[in-house]
Amino acid sequence: MGIVDMNYLSLASIILTFCAAYTISLVIYRLVLSPLANFPGPKLAAATTWYETFYDVFLNGRFLWEIERMHQEYGPVVRINPHEIHIHDVKYYTTIYAGPTKKRSKYPWFLSVGVPHSTFSTAEYHGHRTRRAALAPLLTKQAVRGYEPVIQEKLSYLCRHLDQAICSDAVVELHMCFLSFAVDVVSHIVFGSFMCFDLLKSQSLDSRWKAGIKGPFARFLLTRHFPFAMTLYRFSPLWLSGLVDPVCKDGAFIENVSGPLNLDVYLEAPTPEIEKRFTRFFHDCESEVNDRPSNTGILRDLLENSAGIPERQRRLRALDDVKFLMIAGTDAPSQVLAITVFHILRNDSCCHKLQKELDDALPNPYYNPPLKMLEALPFLSAIIREGLRISSVVTSRLPRIAPTEVLTYEGWSIPPGIPVSMSTYLIHNDPVIFPEPSKFQPERWMPDSNGACLYNGPMPFSKGSQACLGPSMTYCWCYLALATMFRRYDMILFETSEENVKTMRDCFNAQTKPGYDRIQIKVLGRRK
Image (cartoon, rainbow, N blue to C red):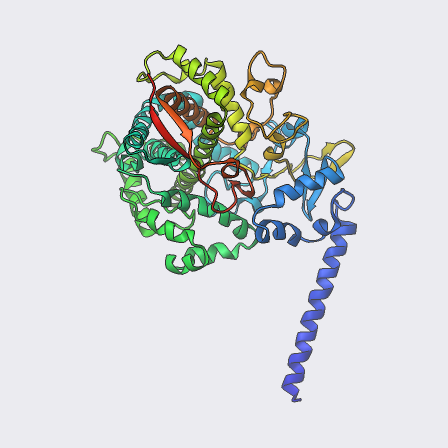
């Protein structure tokens, strides 16, 4: 053996020895010396992040249910990985997800979704508060009421597809249908009517749009644990990415969908075409050159609200906020609607009770009722709240960090800077809070009920100064869409079972087993 070979062996031995020593030291620190060392939980989970990676990546999004098992074994407070504490106690929710008087930052590790300049991905407390202040006024309850004519218009196009299904005896896939509705509403509100995608104006709806939007969520599990994967996806050609991830083929379809804006559905670096469109929009807004009165989207207001920062930074921020709105702001509400319709149709007494309430309130089935009128209907309101609970479409635990405050819980002290989380999905499926949580029971929310109507927990939108900005929009869509569909149409489920709505994977949003993501109905006819 030569001297060169000996040197290589010596170098390899040194590297291996160093890696082994570092790994052993790190494990000893995490199990013995870490501020979290005494918290209950599996020692393997405390020692290595590979424990969570195994459930998320190799078992395809099952770590949420492993957290549930941990709580059953160790109690309400658990160390779920080397860095994070998880608490299961709804009374403590507003301590973790606190209001503006308490400083809470986001955990950067959970924000690797490919939109680094968005409000959602702004981790630090003060920075997020400033960014949110520019976006929040555009999504308030008052602002949403101003969007009602747009929402009603898109609902009329959705009804055209339901009417076509009556004539052709075709099957309607609800998630695809509601997602097209959501994309049209959001793109119209954001960009104005000229840049609306107008998916519902197509003769038929294409399922590739749904696949192209849902695909990135499934991939977030991989990119969160292996951030370099995002770079590989970003710079690989679509045909090459498609060999690894078949949904990329649907991404190619969406990037080429007809319309004035080709949305980059992968939440990655914008394509030159998107840059060109946004640049034109920004130029029109800033130079006041706009001969199209229909171009009145809230993007203009968002830009004006963020005036005073460099143009390029303002452009990147607005672009990422819009991309996040177009993905997260369309998929989650459309899932809620589809799952809620499934449960209504599956329960004959519930369906008849809802239709009677709507018949009494709306004698004319073609009348477009205002949101305020529908909000006064108790059973419809109860159905929407139960639909939001049972769907629990945002399954991610969304940790928060108290940067300067020691959090205390039942004798445990959590040092500043430690990520702490709680899972809304586990709260909504806790039989102590909601008896028989797997059953769709709108009656539990009725004013004369002694049950969960008193519950003031998070629902799916979280709480606090960093909660979701979309609850007013989601409630508006649910009221208008459900009232329109169940007042005008008789429908039945078609080749759809509980398996088609059961959450089996936590991919930031709720997902079924692969291949079961479809909720199909047949429209029997119009009601009188």
